[in-house]
Image (cartoon, rainbow, N blue to C red; front, top):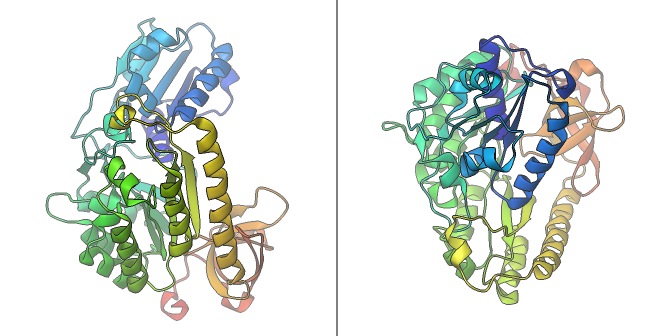
Length: 433
């Protein structure tokens, strides 16, 4: 979502006559887009501000935007004297005016929530012509006790289905073949008339769109209608990121999650029944206040029971303003560190076992670009598996059929089956299917 917001800000500023540069030494305006979910993220922002302020010349503007800006507001202007402006997620439209004020010596902050703001008239400037993020929902009405998001993103509101479909249609007409729908609890989407099932079917029907993903859903918002739409819409990919946070029902209750362990497992079964072969990833927090060793063991056993394909793991981070701050029995840092080590080991072991079993199987991949290292290409399957293969640069942005030849445990090596190669813009989609 932060990537999507950055693309939106590029659109706002480009429309106002600004040109983007990645070199702070020549920039007139430097903006740091921020996250506030964990304290570690905020500390990194402060460090980045320290780096950037040395590039600041008279008349230049240094600003903090996004969730950390929303959380701290004008206090951030007091805390970091070099900061000229602070803008929350609903204030990006006013960037040019606030920058002009700052250039005139008037430091400013805009952290007001605007329930009507969806930036419909602002074209995002995207770096990736192949795959795009499309925000369909902003804010969150859930009140998980550990989460700062409702305080930094405001109440939940959804874009109109027709506006989303229009944006995706424009992207597809420009050659984008993969779209990821974004929302804090994306499958609770409802625009007053249409729900998430309607949205999946409508977006999935856009001509030229080959893959449709979404993140992040809430487990108990997978209604029968949504499951049916996923199963019956060919573009919907066989991968769901399904945050669990803990495998202990007692911990989940303290987190104020709207499910227990048993209900979560039922949702997993429903997803696998609707889309056989679906890959599941998740988010897990260790060391939530009051978490006992037995409760942590329940999380480890859930990793084995569900057999996640991947997991993002976090040590609980105190967020001032969240209810969890008041829960007694905070877990010591050294215990959290030890537990996350065991959790990561368990997640990797399960994922490696699953991935070894996939060696020798064939998959459709979208070639996304050059691999970070070496001369290979990086590609992604519908189930969100990363594969490295040998091929020409012309393959970037195209779809190929490959066979997995090996795995590191997390990524795959792959061999292209040339007889099945097809470009993203092939007119013979029916033959491909």
